[in-house]
Length: 216
Image (cartoon, rainbow, N blue to C red; front, side):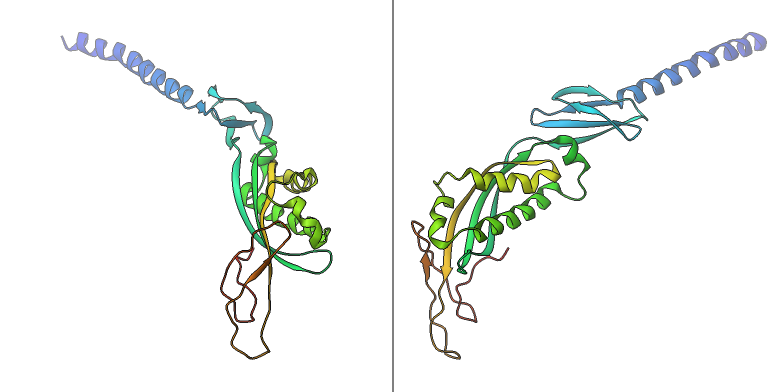
């Protein structure tokens, strides 16, 4: 009896080992599955080298060899506040709306830090440059409701290194801060004179008498 039991134990050990090995292989294989959402792309690299971009659905990455970076593809609105100077030397407080999405998933995945934040900072620089090329009287073409493809083109070129594409860029408000009162006097409530066709905004004067605006 003891010999028979020992023989059965020896024979059952390989079977148990095979079962455990099979479970481990199945777990490793299942770890390569990735579900990509309808508004995402998966940038895949094999041993660090670009392999391709996978679309929505259930995708498989080779465990231990492939890595994947999820990239959002939907367009996202960004509200931007900045201070700018026109070509004829008029300072402005500007509010703009930029709708941007991913244009190049591989570049977006390769970008250091946050591509969205970097693209927003580049958008502010591009907007200042566009305004600096215009006189005050020329700004109505940039305001909401205007159609200025040059504005979109300049912003799109600025954000392209991060794999971002500009879909819509428009200036929704542009106001000129007004200084009044002799030096050293208590500044009165400030008012803003609108750029042509823009509505005048309201605000309380700062310590130097200029209308307060949200800095960039």
